Each structure stands twice: as structure tokens, then as C-alpha cells.
Image (cartoon, rainbow, N blue to C red; front, side, top):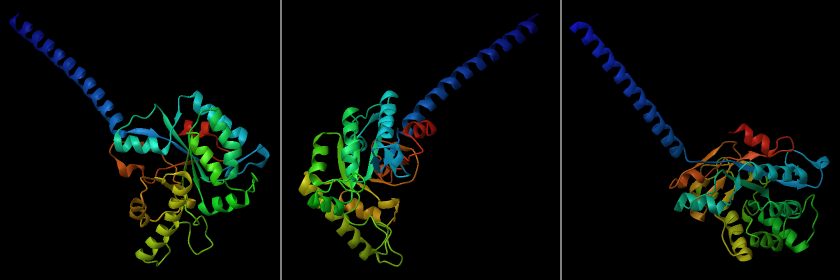
Length: 288
């Protein structure tokens, strides 16, 4: 009889121990998952646009229609995303200033006039923020000619100023005159055999020129640089930091994770190209 009771007691003890262990494992797993979410940082998708056209019949790989852009902005608004500026991202990483839930960054490369005449009214309609990275030489040219053709013109300094003053658009640096491959160089990429000193002098001069022009016309120096064509040389990293850039944009398609204090983490941010065949909805659903 005593043996039976002893065995029963042992069984109860074992069952209780297993139960306690299971509870501990569940709790520990919960703690681990919570920590993992925090340690992974805040997810930041970045969309990359170029030219905007008036009708779908003119769309192409780098040209999205006005209607297509509006559908994107509507989807973003209705699905809990909040557009943020480059300054907000930098402020979060450097100072811990909170970001809204589900932040998203909209970027427009090259600074086409159609960004002003087609995209800007839609940004105002949906209260959406965006970065427009301009090619300085073309902004200078079209500021002098004041030729406003949505097919090929670029924004003027007056138009850039108007968009900045709205609080919705940040004008950033896409090089002064390096958005080209006809000078033996692919964008701002280092040439084969080029010395470190010669390379540093070239991009500091070109990119620095646009920094000064933006300061003279808009009153601030950009902290974001978008690589022309996404062509990157590691030799550019320290040079861009010395110029004053705290954030750079690549053309690699990847999800970004922002962490307070991880200042290196906002260099070479990945972006998803918005083409005429791939909407913001499709992109965002596929990267969740």
C-alpha cells in the first residue's frame, strides 16, 4: 500500500514539474519573441519612382501614370502606412524621436518637372511626404529656360522651393552632373584604376557643388544622397560622410530595419522600384 502511494506521489510530482517547465518555456519563448521584434528594429519599406505621366498609355519601366500614383497613395493611406521624411528617419536613429506606426518612405529620382505638375498635387491631396532627389545641372538649366514640358523638363529652383515650403517634400542630392555614363564613369562610381585621391576630389567637387546650390536656393544642406543608377563604390562611403550625408539610397531591393543608435544602418537603404507593371500594393504585399 505504501509503495502504491509512493508511486502515485512520484507521478504527481513529475506531472507538476513538466507543467511548470512547459509554462516556463512558453513564457521564455514569449520573452524571446518580444525581444527579437525589438532587436530587429522598425521595418521601413522604401518605394522608388522616377517620372510621372498624365495617362497610362505613356507608362514604362521608369514612368508611372498619374492615376497609378494616386492608387498607390490611396492604398498606402487606407492600409495603415504613414509616409515619413528623410529627416524623420535620421531623427529617429540619431535621437530616438518616435516614428509613426508602419512608416514608409517615397522617393523620386532625377527631379523631373512632372514630379511637380503631376505628383505634387497628389501628395497634397493625400497629405503624403516624399523625397525628390535632383540632378543639379538640370535644375539650373530649366531654371534659366523656364521650359515646362512634362515629358522631359526638370523642376526649377522656384518649384523646388514651393514644394519644400509645403512641408511635404524634401529636395535631396542626386549629384550635380554625374547622372551620366558618357564621361567614362558610371554615375558616381569609382573608375577602374582611379586613385583614391582623384576619386575623392571628383565626387567631393560634383556632389559638393549641388550641396552648396541647394543651400543657396533652399536654405539647408541635404543629409541624403541617392546614388545615380544605383552604381556604388565602397570608396564613396567615407567621402559622403565627410560631406555631411547621414543617409544614402541604393537601388537594391530589400527591407530596411531602423534601430535607435544604428547610424550606419541608414546608409545604403534598399528601395523597391515602382514600375508600370508593379503597383505599391503588389510590392508591399509581397515584402510582408
